Amino acid sequence: MAAAARPCSRGEEGSMSTLGNKTSWQNRTALQPDGVTDGPSDENSPAPQEIRIQVQRILNSPMFKDSEQLGSFLDYVIEEMLAGRADQIKQYTIAVKAFGRPTHFDPRADPIVRIEAGRLRRRLAQYYEDFGAHDPLKITIPTGAYIPVFLLKPSTPMGLPQVAMSVERDPVGPAIVVLPFEAQPGDDAQRFIADGLTEQMLFALNRYSHVLVIAPPLSGAKANWPPDPLPQANARGAHFVLTGRIHVGEESSRVMVRLVDTANGNLLWSDTLVIQAAAADLFLLGEGMSSQVAATLVDTYGVIPRTLLHSTLCTQAGGLHLYAAVLQYSHFMIFGTDESAERAIQMLEQAIQHEPHSALLKAILADMHFMMYQFGADESILERGIRLARQATLLDPQCQHAHFVLAFLPFFRGERVQFVAEMEYAIQSNPNNAWVLAFAGMQFGFVGEWDAGHRLMAK
Image (cartoon, rainbow, N blue to C red; front, side, top):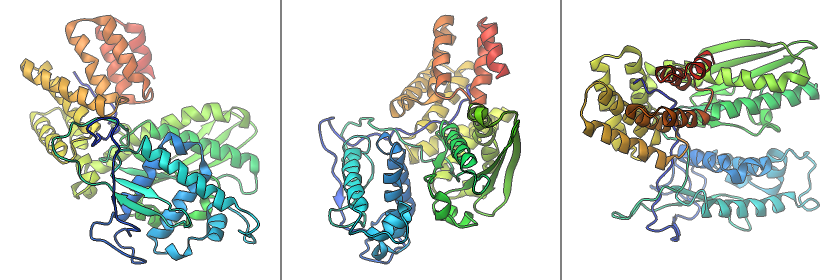
């Protein structure tokens, strides 16, 4: 079996003994992140990257996805604090820089900041009651001020049962900033289309949950980024920046897309896609274009995995050090040698020891066990693979790789109908994943589903 699918998102296990218990955070009032000297500090203060990751968790949650203004508010006060400008976080600066109000804004006449601050406090409280109940870092905006406070969650008591409660991005993969696509200056219609294509690109990339997608708010986002976005993107923990420009014609449109490495400014990939459609049809065709670009960049053999395979980034500590285990798995899938298999298993086992809550790592290690079983290993290897895959689905119920692997259980038993149903379920979470489509199509052929297999292979 060549069970190869996209890496999966992380569902962080909780630290509650029962679902009814509240999670507590250790209150380190007005903690300053490492490197920020404006205000009190603490040796256990969160690092800027930890804070930014927590902000992304919050902004990616359903409670914030529908409120661009609240997201802009939170992002602005966090970045100002990380830059050491906490004393500049005032009603006026929030209104002008986060909300795009004119420079003659008068906070005494317009209560927008006070109103939105109240909404933000309530929304944050709701988030930490539900989706963020087990997050390691709590962000609050105390009443009467706009400066964020960071509350650290104490370590999990030993012996308490773990409950999978929330789903978040796996910590082992690369981060990519997607800047709003550019359009003809002064053309509001093209600006509207460019924003729509940017949203489609974000959605397409976000299906690959081993990638952390950093998405600045579209409204006024360009004003918050310098002409050269790489230093700021690098400072925010991003490894890559994706930019685009559109030109809409009467009969056809062009979309120019570029991927740049934030560490050195190297242009890793670029393409110009010609869409034979006017503006009215561009959104519909743009969805296919976005899926094509996302697959080219972040699929298993995409530009980013191939770039990182031999990159020094993956020899450093932190998330990409763990991602090296995923890349070693891809290396094995390409070359198929005993040495590469042993190395992949070794690196995956070590990575799971470091990050035991990663659905990505457990699903891939399960895949390796299934393949070992297929090539002659005993039942105990298969049983461990099943346990790993099921653990991955508990950590992340939408983990495509885990569902892909588990679909082979009915395949091994000769249960054709159940196998097809399980595989189709696995495909649904990311129907643009080229590896899943290719291998699922091949396996469909093995069980006599020729037409369905051919459609998947053709796609």
